[in-house]
Length: 96
Image 1: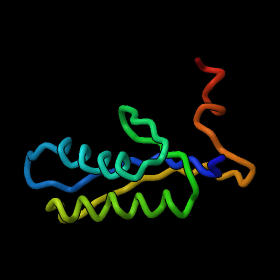
Image 2 (image 1 turned 135 degrees about the horizontal axis):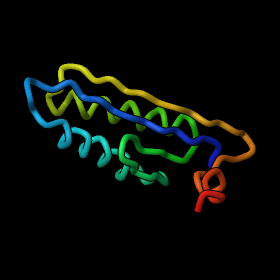
Image 3 (image 1 turned 180 degrees about the vertical axis):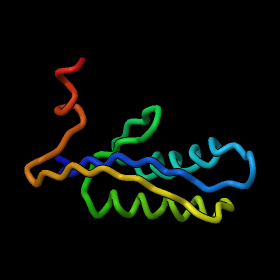
């Protein structure tokens, strides 16, 4: 079982009135290619896995933004870590 939930919001810096959505889509693509369980929400994406792996994915997301031409990136994260196990489903099942 996974030990960590990480919610991430990536905010790429863009030029002028350029649309940020293609950049955000690229960041989500990095998550999808990682193979970790995740849930895309309106304002963030939650990942489920082991803390070192999740932090590496966030690094890869930031690297992808720079490679795509963003001069700067702001990333906000929220972590829930439990060595005995952490699951998105367990935390939210009472709301379904």
